[in-house]
Each structure stands twice: as C-alpha cells, then as structure tokens.
Length: 251
Image (tube, rainbow, N blue to C red; front, side, top):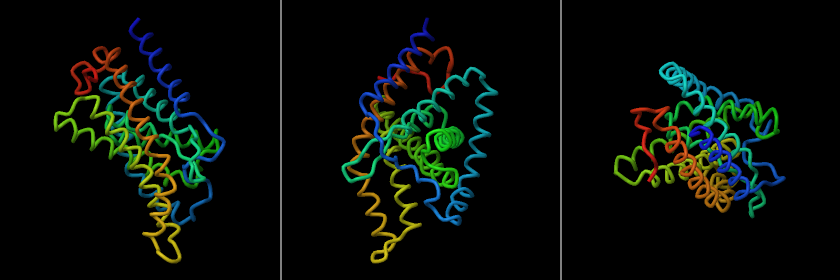
C-alpha cells in the first residue's frame, strides 16, 4: 500500500510540474547539435569523462550495497528527464527549462548524477532532438556535473547550519538549477567571445538572456523537489534507506 501511494504522489507531482511550468515549441537551452566547434566538443567530453567514471563507480557501489536502491535511482533519472524536457519560452526570445538534477544529487551524491544525466541527455538528443550528440559532453558538464555538485554543496552547507530540511532541499535544488545556466552561459561565452567586449561581454549577454525566465523556474523546481523528496521519505524512507543519512521526512 505504501509503495502504491508513493507512486501516486510521484506521478501527481510530475503532472503538476507540467501544469505549472507548461511546455513550448521553442528550442530549450541544451546546446544544440553542431553549435560548438569540434575542438570545444572534444574538450568538454574529455572534462566530463572522469566525472562519469566516478559516478559509475559510485552508482555500482550503491546498488551493490542495497539492490532496492535501483527504484530510487530510476526515479531520480526520470525526474530529471521529465523536468529537463520541458521547454519554457522566455520573454527575451529564447527559452529555458528546469533541470531536475538536485533531487538525485541530494539523495545519492553529485557524482551519480553524471551517469543519470548522461542517460537523460542521450535519450533527449536521440528521441526529442533536444541538445545533441556532439554537444553531449558540454551539456553533461553543465547539467549533470556542475549543477549537481552545487546542489549537493549547498545542501550539505545548509544542513550543517541546521536549517530546516525542507529549506535545505529547496535552496539546494533552486541554486543548482541556476548554476547549470551560469555554467552553460560561460561555456557559450568561451566558445563565442564578443568582438568588442570579449568573454565578459559575451557571458553577460548569455546570462541576461536566460536570467528572467530561469529565476522563477528555479524557484518552481525547488518547491517541486521538496514535494517529491518529502514523498520519498514519507513512503519509502524506512523500507529503503534504513539508517541512511537520507532518512527523515522533510519538515
């Protein structure tokens, strides 16, 4: 009965994400196929590979220690897939999307999200034309590495300061979302520096394009992440996590 209720809560939460955040016909801000030069594509792939290897090792250890964690790992990946597939038009003429990576980073640590993020981005590139294969390394670094590490760091800092659990999760997910876009803006600025102002001018331009849309999206993602995290702890915390540091309902 608890598992059934848990699944209903998760499905309802994700449905709420679609209703609250909506979709659009514009292209979202994964760096599109062919947008980066081969040199930068190879560079970001090389930078991301060590994190992917570390995440694969960490994920294998988690599953070996407790095979029932497969359900939660799959759910964390699905959460990231659903949220990062949404396309939210921006008043600046582009569009943005949530990332959904904070939940998995908080539950399993940031390195695991490099593997889940790679799977999510690969499926989106192949099935949704969202992002691309040549830019997979760059998108993975911003969404599957930088965002989760920032989320995890913020969560541990807030938890260390004895902030309420719900606040720790909210702030971690929200800032991790914003961090993804900051890193992506820097990636684009490095690859396409402004003729007049160089990297700084280009970075400010890219940051400005997405900031207006991304701030409310980050807040919405933070709220939804708290809801889903709370549902997980309420219905599966004792049976799956036992004495894990993850145990305990968000209050």
